[in-house]
Length: 173
Image 1: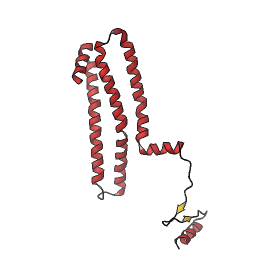
Image 2 (image 1 turned 180 degrees about the vertical axis):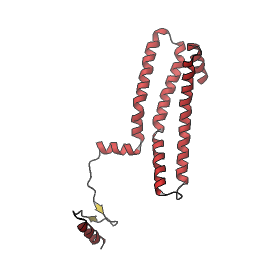
Image 3 (image 1 turned 90 degrees about the vertical axis):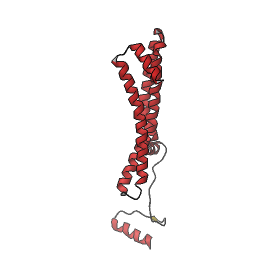
Image 4 (image 1 turned 90 degrees about the horizontal axis):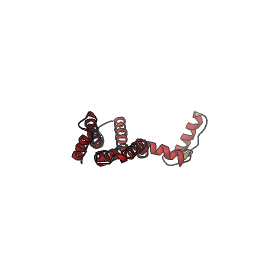
Protein backbone atom coordinates (compact mmCIF):
# COMPACT_ATOMS: atom_id res chain seq x y z
CA UNK A 1 0.00 0.00 0.00
CA UNK A 2 2.84 2.36 0.85
CA UNK A 3 4.47 1.78 -2.55
CA UNK A 4 1.15 2.43 -4.29
CA UNK A 5 0.83 5.65 -2.34
CA UNK A 6 4.31 6.83 -3.32
CA UNK A 7 3.72 5.93 -6.97
CA UNK A 8 0.36 7.70 -7.14
CA UNK A 9 1.73 10.78 -5.37
CA UNK A 10 4.54 11.03 -7.89
CA UNK A 11 2.14 10.39 -10.78
CA UNK A 12 -0.36 13.05 -9.71
CA UNK A 13 2.03 15.76 -8.62
CA UNK A 14 5.28 14.84 -10.22
CA UNK A 15 8.20 14.60 -7.84
CA UNK A 16 7.48 17.84 -6.01
CA UNK A 17 8.36 18.75 -2.46
CA UNK A 18 4.70 18.44 -1.48
CA UNK A 19 4.65 14.74 -2.39
CA UNK A 20 7.92 14.11 -0.58
CA UNK A 21 6.73 15.99 2.50
CA UNK A 22 3.41 14.09 2.53
CA UNK A 23 5.21 10.74 2.38
CA UNK A 24 7.70 11.85 5.03
CA UNK A 25 4.94 13.13 7.30
CA UNK A 26 2.94 9.92 6.96
CA UNK A 27 6.04 7.84 7.69
CA UNK A 28 6.77 9.93 10.78
CA UNK A 29 3.19 9.56 12.03
CA UNK A 30 3.24 5.77 11.72
CA UNK A 31 6.73 5.42 13.21
CA UNK A 32 5.78 7.70 16.11
CA UNK A 33 2.86 5.40 16.98
CA UNK A 34 5.18 2.39 17.05
CA UNK A 35 7.70 4.32 19.16
CA UNK A 36 4.99 5.51 21.54
CA UNK A 37 3.68 1.98 22.13
CA UNK A 38 7.24 0.75 22.72
CA UNK A 39 7.94 3.52 25.25
CA UNK A 40 4.66 2.81 27.06
CA UNK A 41 5.66 -0.85 27.40
CA UNK A 42 9.08 0.17 28.75
CA UNK A 43 7.41 2.55 31.22
CA UNK A 44 5.22 -0.28 32.48
CA UNK A 45 8.20 -2.62 32.83
CA UNK A 46 10.26 -0.04 34.74
CA UNK A 47 7.33 0.62 37.08
CA UNK A 48 6.98 -3.06 37.99
CA UNK A 49 10.74 -3.66 38.24
CA UNK A 50 11.24 -0.84 40.74
CA UNK A 51 8.77 -2.27 43.24
CA UNK A 52 10.43 -2.03 46.65
CA UNK A 53 13.54 -0.31 45.27
CA UNK A 54 12.36 3.30 45.03
CA UNK A 55 10.66 5.61 47.46
CA UNK A 56 6.89 5.85 47.39
CA UNK A 57 7.08 9.38 46.00
CA UNK A 58 9.11 8.28 42.97
CA UNK A 59 6.92 5.22 42.45
CA UNK A 60 3.84 7.44 42.53
CA UNK A 61 5.38 9.71 39.89
CA UNK A 62 6.20 6.66 37.76
CA UNK A 63 2.64 5.40 38.09
CA UNK A 64 1.24 8.80 37.10
CA UNK A 65 3.57 8.88 34.08
CA UNK A 66 2.52 5.37 33.07
CA UNK A 67 -1.18 6.16 33.50
CA UNK A 68 -0.85 9.31 31.40
CA UNK A 69 1.00 7.55 28.60
CA UNK A 70 -1.46 4.64 28.69
CA UNK A 71 -4.39 7.01 28.33
CA UNK A 72 -2.85 8.47 25.15
CA UNK A 73 -2.75 5.12 23.32
CA UNK A 74 -6.42 5.05 22.26
CA UNK A 75 -6.56 8.66 20.94
CA UNK A 76 -3.27 8.34 19.09
CA UNK A 77 -4.30 5.02 17.55
CA UNK A 78 -7.64 6.36 16.32
CA UNK A 79 -5.90 9.44 14.97
CA UNK A 80 -3.46 7.21 13.10
CA UNK A 81 -6.35 5.22 11.60
CA UNK A 82 -7.97 8.45 10.41
CA UNK A 83 -4.67 9.52 8.87
CA UNK A 84 -4.21 6.12 7.19
CA UNK A 85 -7.70 6.40 5.68
CA UNK A 86 -6.78 9.82 4.29
CA UNK A 87 -3.42 8.41 3.23
CA UNK A 88 -5.13 5.69 1.16
CA UNK A 89 -7.78 7.95 -0.33
CA UNK A 90 -5.17 10.54 -1.30
CA UNK A 91 -3.36 7.83 -3.23
CA UNK A 92 -6.56 7.05 -5.11
CA UNK A 93 -6.81 10.64 -6.31
CA UNK A 94 -4.95 9.69 -9.50
CA UNK A 95 -7.88 7.54 -10.58
CA UNK A 96 -10.70 9.94 -9.67
CA UNK A 97 -12.23 12.09 -12.43
CA UNK A 98 -11.82 15.83 -12.04
CA UNK A 99 -15.54 16.30 -11.32
CA UNK A 100 -15.25 14.39 -8.05
CA UNK A 101 -12.19 16.17 -6.67
CA UNK A 102 -14.15 18.83 -4.78
CA UNK A 103 -16.28 16.25 -2.89
CA UNK A 104 -13.09 14.36 -2.04
CA UNK A 105 -11.47 17.49 -0.65
CA UNK A 106 -14.65 18.19 1.35
CA UNK A 107 -14.55 14.64 2.69
CA UNK A 108 -10.87 14.99 3.67
CA UNK A 109 -11.64 18.25 5.44
CA UNK A 110 -14.51 16.61 7.33
CA UNK A 111 -12.33 13.65 8.38
CA UNK A 112 -9.57 15.96 9.60
CA UNK A 113 -12.10 18.00 11.60
CA UNK A 114 -13.53 14.83 13.17
CA UNK A 115 -10.02 13.65 13.99
CA UNK A 116 -9.15 16.97 15.58
CA UNK A 117 -12.26 17.09 17.74
CA UNK A 118 -12.24 13.38 18.64
CA UNK A 119 -8.67 13.30 20.02
CA UNK A 120 -9.29 15.30 23.24
CA UNK A 121 -12.62 13.57 23.87
CA UNK A 122 -11.00 10.14 23.67
CA UNK A 123 -8.18 11.28 25.94
CA UNK A 124 -10.64 12.51 28.55
CA UNK A 125 -12.60 9.26 28.37
CA UNK A 126 -9.52 7.04 28.75
CA UNK A 127 -7.67 8.96 31.47
CA UNK A 128 -8.70 7.64 34.88
CA UNK A 129 -8.29 10.95 36.73
CA UNK A 130 -10.40 12.95 34.28
CA UNK A 131 -12.94 10.15 34.04
CA UNK A 132 -13.49 10.31 37.82
CA UNK A 133 -13.89 14.09 37.69
CA UNK A 134 -16.42 13.89 34.86
CA UNK A 135 -18.41 11.18 36.61
CA UNK A 136 -18.46 13.13 39.86
CA UNK A 137 -19.79 16.21 38.04
CA UNK A 138 -22.72 14.39 36.45
CA UNK A 139 -23.51 11.21 38.33
CA UNK A 140 -22.34 11.38 41.94
CA UNK A 141 -23.75 13.65 44.57
CA UNK A 142 -21.65 15.24 47.25
CA UNK A 143 -21.14 12.91 50.17
CA UNK A 144 -20.49 13.93 53.72
CA UNK A 145 -17.22 12.37 54.78
CA UNK A 146 -17.12 11.16 58.35
CA UNK A 147 -13.97 10.61 60.35
CA UNK A 148 -13.74 7.00 61.51
CA UNK A 149 -11.32 4.95 63.54
CA UNK A 150 -9.72 1.78 62.27
CA UNK A 151 -12.45 -0.25 63.96
CA UNK A 152 -15.14 1.73 62.15
CA UNK A 153 -16.42 3.93 64.99
CA UNK A 154 -17.55 7.39 63.91
CA UNK A 155 -15.70 10.34 65.41
CA UNK A 156 -17.89 13.40 65.80
CA UNK A 157 -16.36 16.57 64.41
CA UNK A 158 -16.17 19.41 66.91
CA UNK A 159 -15.28 23.03 66.44
CA UNK A 160 -12.18 23.17 68.60
CA UNK A 161 -9.11 21.02 68.39
CA UNK A 162 -9.31 20.16 72.08
CA UNK A 163 -12.80 18.72 71.74
CA UNK A 164 -11.74 16.84 68.63
CA UNK A 165 -8.81 15.16 70.39
CA UNK A 166 -10.96 14.37 73.41
CA UNK A 167 -13.45 12.65 71.13
CA UNK A 168 -10.55 10.84 69.49
CA UNK A 169 -9.25 9.59 72.85
CA UNK A 170 -12.72 8.49 73.87
CA UNK A 171 -13.21 6.54 70.68
CA UNK A 172 -9.87 4.76 71.17
CA UNK A 173 -10.86 3.65 74.70
